[in-house]
Image (tube, rainbow, N blue to C red; front, side):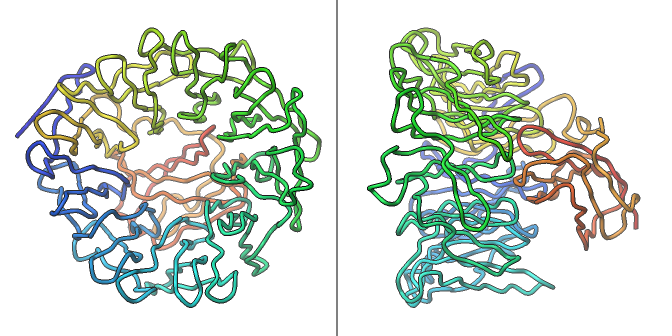
Length: 530
């Protein structure tokens, strides 16, 4: 069955595969790119649920391994995709796949039996994969997976000794350390590989303090909302804090606009500003900014009273994009819609009332691919994928599925083909694709910047890279071949320090690399020879 619809000129969306034949849905999630393939989860009740793979063709879309129930988040590490899954025998354990059926295997049966170790929080840090896991002898603690010379070793940090649990949550790598919250006591923990320390960083505050700590990098430190752990000291409620050295933290905000409880959420750095949603007296929950120097006190201010009659309705959608903050907000007149801010009142404005009138467009799921921001929204005709190329421009509808719709964040591009989740009355929610005209990712990367040094160039089996501009410590480096296919992505630390990638084993030809951290990017091309 081929179901196609015309969208933007030269672009056609079509059903890639009806995984759950008929009107039933396959509930696609966790789309993760691995070279020129996409690994994802599909759930078919009573049938072929588990990790699937696609290369953009129906023949190249198939089940990798049948699993019981849902699998966990997917993370790329050492050119493999790792995830938690239950094969019905070992319980939920750590698995890996290279995109083939024979290469989809359980890494280790950490907790033998039907219950499994239930791995979660999979996070790449310091050339290793960290995750939380459970074992009856140690409780729920921090695990680490190392891969050296094709040997895989898993270790455990029994932070709270014995069967009691630390319950590591919200793992966040930054500035050479791995920060996380112990969900058992809500204290701030860390792992420092240079000092060989894994434990409590500070027990005087509780990040969050009940949910997401919204960790964010800004001015060479990690920022987060928190409350004092001592209830007698917690008079100022939830405020903005940051990490100092040697186990210290400091509060950055106190009473702001005569309001005791600021409750910062959705911390997002854009350039020299840290945006967040904050509760302000007499204004409600509105867009705020903290700005300051590395070693000097900063200032906090409300950017704009977006909704004069109540809260600004922030939080469903917030992301850095091309030196601006793109977010969802609104009032009773427009509903919650697409906004942009540069940190000033005049530069904070509604981009478009996508669903005209007081009804909200349900804008969610921002995904940045290349130099374009994609998201889901409903203009009154149904939910579809939209795109925004420039913060000063207007969004345009990217898909238009007859008798259905499409939505993120399940959206990945392989060359000129987008793979995504969409639905219609005939097939339910299934896997779709759309090939686009125009430049490929590689062609868009040809315009090089001057702030990356690559040597040797041409490259044989290894490459050394140094960036002369400082990026955040959550910057990533991606490699593309001449067709625009992404073949590797790594999270990097200090971009000013040279780093080397060995054992490339790539085919001869032209390649591109791009370093980006959400607010800026740098591009370099290089040649690989035999």
